[in-house]
Image (cartoon, rainbow, N blue to C red; front, side):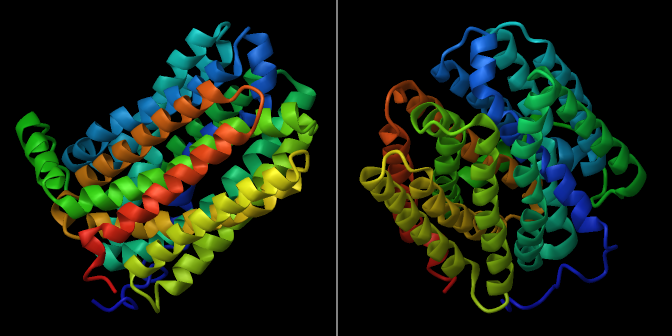
Length: 401
């Protein structure tokens, strides 16, 4: 199949990919914007750092669970209806997070926030697959990823600014406003991209999931990409403890750590989009996975040689985030390539595996994060090495060189 066909820039309005990016950006905003406030939230809610890790895991669990229904519902009732409904729930859950007075309530509303928020990234990828086809989707998703990378760059800066002016609940009020704006834009601008069946039956959903599960290469690519992504979910909630508590970085300066990682992701996404014209998805994905291993190893080496120097961690983290921009869009495109007839369901199962893995890994590492950055670093190295092994062995890649 010619990798140079189906340019994402053609036939669609200029605002189309930015609209998809805005919908997908709800995920990094929900994760990154409250990170500078984690230590303040822990004090306010009388919670430990491990419990604050669970606030991220709760979001990921809700995100993962609804992934199993998000695709089938979108296949039955249409992408647009589900996007509007999901963002409505997201707005309500964000307000609930802002009003929480204890960690248990916060985690509960974070689960609901994940349920509502998962429609944005999931259906943005699915809509790209609907519009651009299996080959063009990889490029479209890379462009969307590059555009939405602005969100995690702005989010921690915005969260830090909110903390300077107001208290942490206003971060979640801002997220509620963002969800409402997205819902309105979808109502006004987005056209449905699939025929609406107006029928939802459990039996075909189970049959579709069984079809995906019985395809070994789908599971292998999804598992490898999920482990690769899990390293990010180890780093993000651990960063406030490592940089602020252990290294003495000012909370308002933590945002610049995340900006640096986002810069790497933007470069990786741009490189991924350009390479997709010349190389097959399998090679780009494997190259990105290898870069992940090298980057996380460099992080450990940097911390070992200079444990009180933030730059020793930040510089290699940029290369890890660059690798994410290379791995994730091509992993999704490869996994869904044989399943155009159930692309929404395939995207749902892929996301469920990814977020479930990330939630478990993040919670496990958070339990051991007490007086050193080593649990974070060892966890990141372990999952990226395992991801590379799985992707290298994947049968899906054999015909994609």
